[in-house]
Image 1: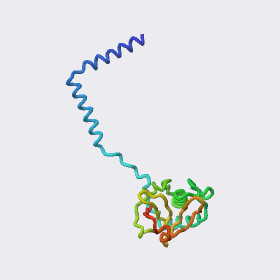
Image 2: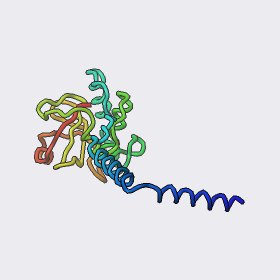
Image 3: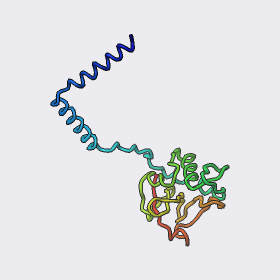
Image 4: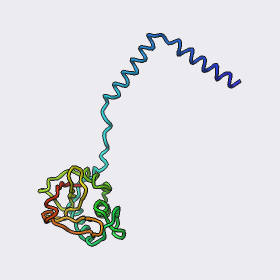
Amino acid sequence: MAAGSAASGRAAACARIAAVTPGKRLFLSAMLVQGLLLAGCRSAPSRPDRFNYPALTPDQASDIAIHALGLVGTPYRYGGNTPDGGFDCSGLIGYVYRTRAGLVPPRTVAQLDEFGEPVRVDALRTGDLVLFGRGRPTHAGIYVGGGRFVHAPSTGGTVRLDRLAGVYWAKQPVSARRP
């Protein structure tokens, strides 16, 4: 009996579709096309500002710099984000900002390029981020003042303090962000 009622239900639905006049079919088609066109006009959804934090206080910025300097000598480890396990450059930044300012920066250098506000390199302050690379940055560190920054450079190395005006770094494209 259920199979018979299902078949009769399908037959009734087919009859209703067949009963749609050509005028109604044209109207429904036009409405569908209009809906699709208007859907294409709406703006893209706004991207939530995942990294919108209040500015660092001078005390937080100093604490970040002091803590970063205290990690100099920690081994480099790709994907590392703890003093015991070692650091890569973004892991170092994440650890220091999280433990000293309660901020959770993005995990990759490319995402750090959207963290905080852009800053001119000649206007750097303690606690700012310095990012290196053409186009999308590929390396980052924490500016600690006096033209110096702390970073985790590469495999086999350790977290270290370098000068922006040093032989290697002065030749690299640099940008800066202020969380």
